[in-house]
Amino acid sequence: MEKTFSIIKPDGVRRNLIGQVLAKIEQAGLRITATKLVHMTKEQAEKFYEIHAKRPFYQELCEYMISGPVLVSVLEGPNAVAVYRDIMGATNPAQAEKGTIRAEFALSIGENTVHGSDSSENAKIEISHFFSEIEMVNSLTKISH
Ligand code: CMP
Image (cartoon, rainbow, N blue to C red; front, side, top):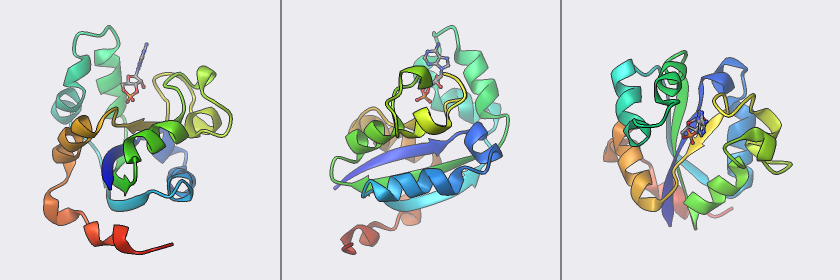
């Protein structure tokens, strides 16, 4: 079992897409083992995206991520990182494959509806920004479909 970290970004929450995005996650066989709405502070967003601090879009990205609430979630399943990246589609929605979350819902490379961890190691770090161990319901993954 692998864990990954997901954010439904402000454009997804604002356009009432939480249910449709979570449905795609569940249809892909991933379990939601923790989830909550968060309205990040500037400091939280800057810390979360610290890895991009030197990129030209860093400030714009952080401003956007605090423009409204987001839904942060922990997803669990076999190969959860790769499975979630597959169903998200490419960062730039113009390049995202048909049927992916970003192809269907994203507005632009910035307002691209979802974030997902790029590795299991980064998933652990990203999860720790928002969740403590006690908030994750690991036993859910043992329930069969
Ligand atoms: P995300 O997976 O959240 O990780 C970093 C984010 O930066 C990325 O998704 C994009 O939404 C955002 N971003 C904004 N501009 C760019 C850009 N020019 N290239 C790549 N990512 C960008």
